[in-house]
Length: 354
Image 1 (tube, rainbow, N blue to C red):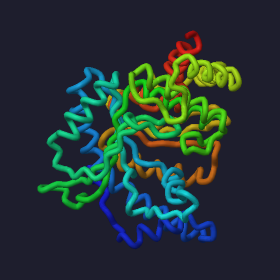
Image 2: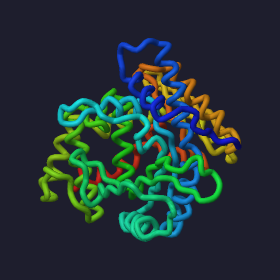
Image 3: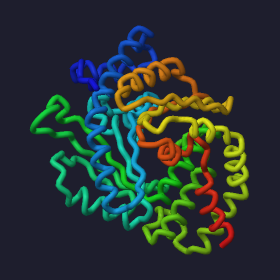
Image 4: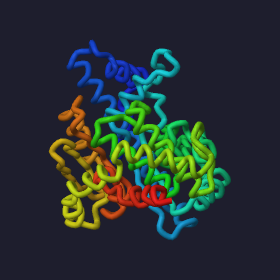
């Protein structure tokens, strides 16, 4: 296939980012900015493809059945990151310097496998690409409870495809339990119209997930989240109180029952497709899935951009373009789009029954 290449300068790309967060920009300016953004994002497809294949091969060395997936960052998420400020300062992120426009993820069964994959295959591995960022949110969980390993690389080739040198791709490594926690938050965000994932959710929901993250960390013999009880009995007691207040299990089971027809949609897909475009109508409880072969990746990216434009500014629609090997992997990698919170509920029930 023909991979997208960079058509715009660094200055033009950064200007496009500035326009996208400028409320006074004209529609014509924003359309042009989206065109530039789409090209810049699509440029990361080839390096992302390479990192995804490498990640899968390395993950198979530590786990017989790892789950790997890749994604291009959604436009709303890009704009949010461009707008985000820290400690009251003005936003400083520029579009050209954003390091996670392309990202791939490996989910392995245990925390020990996650560590082995990170330490032996990446930190002490033989990758020729330049490692520029390493963050271990398992050893030091984020205050909101997020736990995973993030590594950002600059693509480097001495032979072909040198035009992609310098583009950055994020590699994430996490255990299955950490993945269950993270996707449960995305499910709640989708159906309650919150932004817990971005630290802008309701305090009770945020506290609930922070506490559950510490409980999951204890199950994996890892560090607890800051400012949560270290005593298991007290920790579980607080989780029970929050679950009773929020009716977490009842809500999640209700969402799952309302979306069972997703399974039928997935079962009908061909096995030779590699990319899926998911369009979720939250209010209407409908999911549209378009599938693409490996050779149709560019068409998938173009369709993704068109749908984002169509639903620009709407919070009752969510869409994502993902690349996975099978439809079964798709459902595992993005359970929030299929409201599959069963594993989270099972582990939560263990805590409640303690």
